[in-house]
Amino acid sequence: MQHNEIYERARLARDARFDGQFFVGVSTTGIYCRPICPAVSPKKENVAFFPSAAAASEAGFRPCLRCRPECAPGTPAWSGTSTTVRRGLRLISTGALDNGDVEQLAERLGVTSRHLRRLFGHHLGASPIAVAHTQRLHFAKRLIDETSLPMSQIALAAGYGSVRRFNDALKATYGRAPRDLRRGNVEQLPRIDGATLSVRLPYRTPFDWAQMLAFFSDRATPGVESVSGERYSRSIALDDGHGIIEVQPAASGNYLQLTLRGVTTASLFEVVQRCREMLDLDAPVADIAAVLGKDPALAERLKSHGGIRVPGSWDGFELTIRAILGQQVSVKAATTLAGRIAAHYGEPLSLSKDTGSDTLNRVFPTADRLVRARLEHCGIIRSRADTIRSVARAVVRSELLFDPAQSPQDFCTALQSIKGIGDWTAQYVAMRALKNPDAFPASDLGLIKAIEWPRRVTPAQLLQRAQSWRPWRAYAALLLWSSHPGSGG
Image (cartoon, rainbow, N blue to C red; front, top):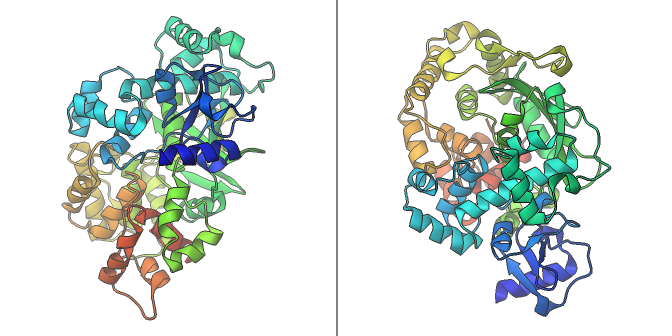
């Protein structure tokens, strides 16, 4: 009841802070809306609240064509208090239920399928299959509205397998054929097969893009990543070839504009979802601020960095190598070393002239290319080179995985079993690659300098103080690093 009262006030106020955190079903129209829907607010007795779009859909409501629920920020990956739900949502967002096998998903998460359904029902009000179906449907609807892709390619990109299944799903949900849903004012961007596709990435507000861009800029691996103006670019390697992603603020609205070059339709959904994670677009900023704001040292920083995010990574192995290079050296020095590794062992970027870049010319080397790499020739000390080769071997042998289904504790234990990897590196990688919101590298000098009161603290003292920041210690770390540019690996 308490939640319903909060949701009712947010609905009447059209409070953007709640956008994507719940949905409103209207019994008189049979549709469900975002809390920010501009339509005339229905009477209280005619509305029902749902914790997810999938729950509203399962209750028989169809999406509103005016406020477009598919454009709301994604369901938070930390819904409720269940880490199993959080990890399950991450896996579903990367296509883990495209085959409809809930048993297999449950096995990856270490629970029974019955328990997984129970957890999803409790925290999201919908089954895992319903969440996956709604995710595909919303992605397809956005491509219809925002791109000029043919319907056959949209069906493939959204994971429907066939145009017929795609048509049936949209007709059942919207009551009309996909072509009838397409707006007449779609910007005529080049089709993805022709070189370029641009899509919008909605985010929760506030969003501190300047802070994230500065973080990426300091750590951009030459030849692989670049920051120019307000735009972040990087090369990517996929199963079907190479591509480039470019991200910058949209001209209007709470969106980032993602431009994809050389990415095939079959990889589109995967790339978009990985970009959302890398940019931490669905972070529950209100919940984070409520916890961290209780500490005076962090409350002051939240005033200027209220939309703090934890920058993720495109690839877990790449980030781990970058973290090893950052051990006990400056951020600038580690970036230089990463660029040398990319130049010597990275594969040349294979794109046509139409999709190329003046600054990007390499993809970061895969683990198999570094197993026997003579990294000492890149200016890397012997012990650190040995650690990098050991990590590469562990990845090739599948002894080290970056699967979000695993617990962060198990991952850190596996990573720290490798000689040369300590708690700082493991926590840093868990923070950015596994997106563990509670990871915290307490021994980081930048964090210690930022929080010292009234004299310099020890890692143990910092860890003790950080207990009150849980479960958002990773965001506290970013807040502290933001006051010391160049800190943080």
